[in-house]
Amino acid sequence: MTTTKPAFGLSARAIDASEFAAIFEQSECLFTLDNGSGRTFVLTDPSGVDFLAIQDSADGNVVLVELADDHESIHHHAREVLNRAF
Image (cartoon, rainbow, N blue to C red; front, side):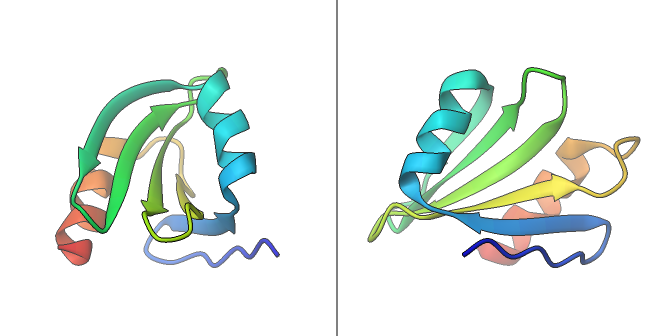
């Protein structure tokens, strides 16, 4: 089941590992962080939209975090999300 919840200029949705594999294959990976309990990716899709993907190591499921406003900096939001996660 996919859900979207806008918050602080971001929207997030949960996807399974197979859907993420297809997205990852078509995207450019700008940054990866492996923190043991999961991995965080900063990606750019084929249309140039930046987003975060946070993958749980236990089940491989992923939360995609996308900008609600494409004029905002993904780097700013990446720092916000990573600061809250760690």
